Amino acid sequence: QVQLVESGGGLVQPGGSLRLSCAASGRFFSTDIMGWYRQAPGEQRELVARIDSTGSTDYVDSVKDRFTISRDNAKNTVYLQMNSLKPEDTAVYYCNARIAATRGWNEYWGRGTQVTVSS
Image (cartoon, rainbow, N blue to C red; front, side, top):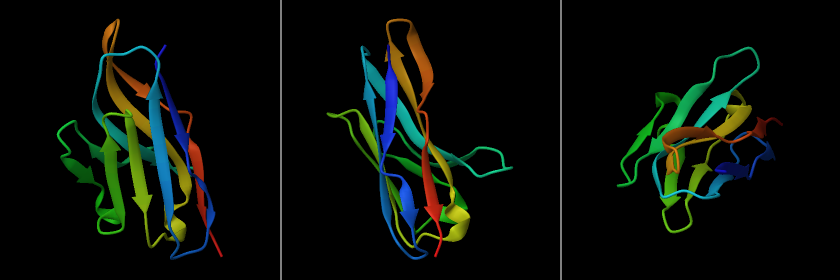
């Protein structure tokens, strides 16, 4: 069974930094696009950043120049370095990945990690 496990969330003051990690585990053959989404209370889930297997990245405009997504293919792990955090970045952050397992390619989600930006 494939699982995505996130870590690194928490409480940080405005202007601070956090680094999120998401590791894929279980039996699978390959990972394709990996990314981070977030959902604030009362809001729809939105894409924050994604990275494909070649390292090509895509960001939502509101986090460009503040957040950096990266991945370690050997560890099947994706990271999100978040700098200059703002209160509006407060949300539950979810890891997402397209993974090839025994039943073919499927999309998987982590359970989410809370990020709170507040003084």
